[in-house]
Amino acid sequence: MVEWAVMLAAGLLLATGIRTFVFEDFSVPSGSMVPTIDVHDRIFAQKAFFSWHDVRQGDIVVFTHPSRDTDCAGPDDTDLVKRVIALPGQTIYSAGNSVYVDGRRLSESYLPPHDPLGPPITGPGGKGAFHVPPGEFYVMGDNRQISCDSRYWGPIKGTSIVGKVVLLWWRHDHPDFHVF
Image (cartoon, rainbow, N blue to C red):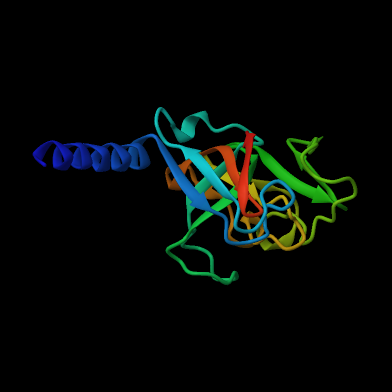
């Protein structure tokens, strides 16, 4: 009996340690990342050996809800999932349905052709381009027309990033593995 209790305790400690330090499972509550990630899909975010300094343009990240979010519905204590569009120090703007980073049109092969942008990307006061401050990232959902993202509440702090999404493992009520 003691062996079983020790094995159960060790298993719980191992599972808690993996979730806390290695990979964390998240359920996606909204359609802001469709078609890449659907509502109620389950994903794993890498936390071990992760540093926000290693985040690259195009990465999908999980981050804490921005405190500057006063426009979007949803609880303030939830984590959000979005794609990194611009890195610290880059300049971003939109023209029509195209996104430009440092003056170059962003290639977004992960989006369907002719995907509407929704609200434009602009600088302060709704004019010009937006310059991403040091230590911050401009994030957007793949479902641009409905996504509440950096266009509403500005860039996110690198320190708010919980982890990088590395695996979609559950889609439409069954296992479905897609590595990012």
